[in-house]
Length: 136
Image 1: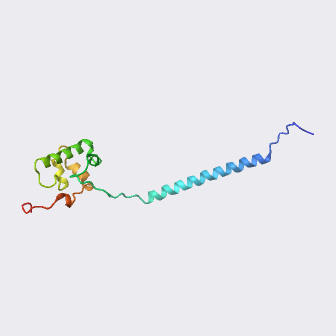
Image 2 (image 1 turned 90 degrees about the vertical axis):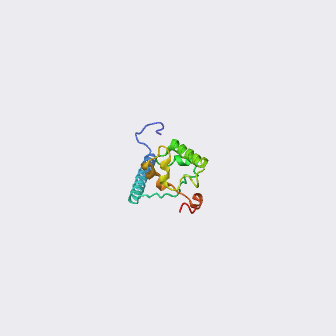
Image 3 (image 1 turned 135 degrees about the horizontal axis):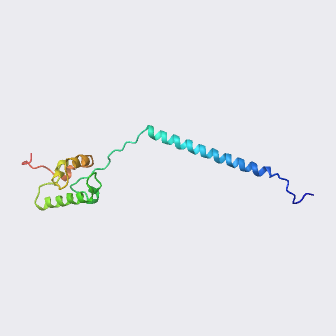
């Protein structure tokens, strides 16, 4: 009986399990890489186009909403709201802003800013009210 004698051989079943496990792991890595490559190639072949779904009416928007417009920010948003309030206090007829160009009356807003925000603005007819016969 050869109890406790080292023969130099390892168990073949242990080596086989390690080899199969390594092979499975390698296959999983390759499959993951192929899946990633295909998904990246698929999205680059079909660029995503974003559409403007929401617009902001500068006559009633909160400063936080106005601040999210391109080239506006918090300071200009406060200026828009301030101008709007002053317009009403001075007895201005109708809304302060009827079209994008009307925002030029606000300090710090020029032609470049108007063009940047134009797609994001709406001037609802119910907010604008009816024009008087003197306006027509």
